[in-house]
Structure formats: structure tokens, C-alpha cells
Length: 141
Picture 1: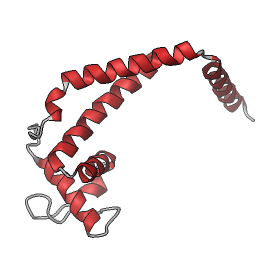
Picture 2: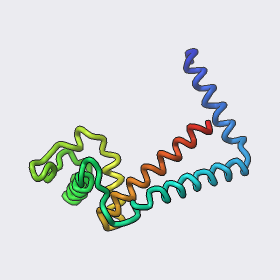
Picture 3: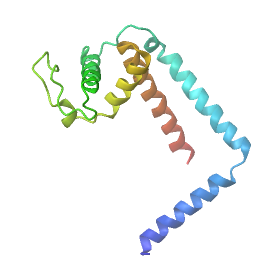
């Protein structure tokens, strides 16, 4: 093992040992802070719990694209490459040029909830909550 790999390996071993040595009280403290972050986020973004669409600089394109993803999934295209109804019916290779994970999560939540607007809104809320949690863990470590 070369020098820099050995250092990285040792750092990983030390980190795993430190996590294993944390007490149960520390884990409860982390869970408490994660709940606080989620609660504050839900309070600040409570408008996303409604069925009203969020109007951004993109207009309603976020909802239209998610609807196109759902239609493509319904047509059997599990990895969509082209959204035929995008850009007001002209079609677009949108999934090929933009990262699809956010739209996949929004499509999944929309499918499970049965409501496109509520699904997209909850996906937006989930992205903010997960961002807050990641910032917390960056500050802790």
C-alpha cells in the first residue's frame, strides 16, 4: 500500500473506531438535533405541505417535467432519454443533459402519493431536510 493510501486507510479506520466508541447518549443527541433540523425546516417550508404549486423562475416546468417522467415510466422507459412532450410539445432530451436523480425522487413520491403537485412539493421539502442533515454532519465531524 502506498503512502497516501495508507494514510487514508488509517484515517478511515480511526473514524470507524471513533463512531463505534460513541456512547448511546451521543447517538440520542445526534437524533435530537436531526429531529430539530427537520422540525425547523418543516416549519419554515410549511407552504410546501399544501397542494398549491410552487411558482419559481422556471414557472411550472418542474411539475411538467416530473409529469413527463411519470409518463415515460408508464410507457416502460425506466431510464428515460427523451421527454417527447417537454418544451410545450416539441420534445427534449432533457434527461440526457441534466442530472435525473431529483426528478426520479419527485416522480417516485408523486407516484406513491398519487398527486403530482404534492409529490413534487414533498420532494423539494425532502431535499432541504437532507441538505440540513448533511450540513449538521459536516459540522460535527
